[in-house]
Length: 386
Image (cartoon, rainbow, N blue to C red; front, side):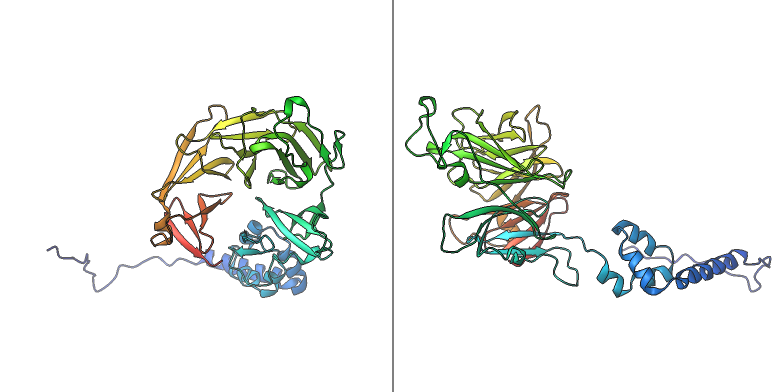
């Protein structure tokens, strides 16, 4: 057993003389502090509060580090109440799409920054949230009257700024009364859904925050895509075109997921692939999913396309596509989903939804009753109340 030894030195009874040093530096520091205090106190409090509340967050943090008087000033509650808070959180859309909740991850105090009731759209009698994308934008179906089931508009809104845009209806010269005639080459069946009634997918690029796109694939007989319409907020109009994906490209019934990344909208298909189209409708591509994982889902994080799948043994696997040219998927992480929730499965079959944090290796997993966030770097789990 090892013993700890204290390192000691014997001191002489009479310490050696030290030269007397005039504390010049301390005088300079005290003069500097007095000068700073005078500068701070020379401005009216309301002016200082107004100036500091308008500073960007990083600049505000630098000001706090200048001195203790500045730190005390920046800690004033009036400044925190006036300063714009950064919105950080996620939306959760319930099974009934009229149900929307927002989970604030900043854990800050003060007034609620996002109103999940969307009260600013008060002119509509009923609102159904169809899509949510990165940046906090929502795509909603809005009815003026609850009794008119087929009289609705698509609205793109930002709950943080309470601004919204009503999308125009999709018009096409080949359509009469909202329906499209079928030629011999595209005769796939008797059923054909019109574009206005098809699923709408919202896309937003943080590099260009002033604009967004909406892509509508017209899914016809057995999930095949005949036509695609693309809306650009920059032009304020729709562009319709024939699909250039392969004739064997089939979308899953009730396809509800898409990812907008690098100027392209990405969709999963039933042919073990991901199909993409750019905002101009000029580049159409198909990317094979990781081998043996044809029923996975897609997401985006840190500028890269991600693919995830939960296998029968509840093993969650996450891949990242680092290069569109090689179309090679790299396995990024694996974890047991049950370990995240700390339990055994409630049923023989469970459904999980996953969302990726846009800026770090963090994922949000829900089994529709409970939600957890999982840090893939530190392998730590945090619970969130739905």
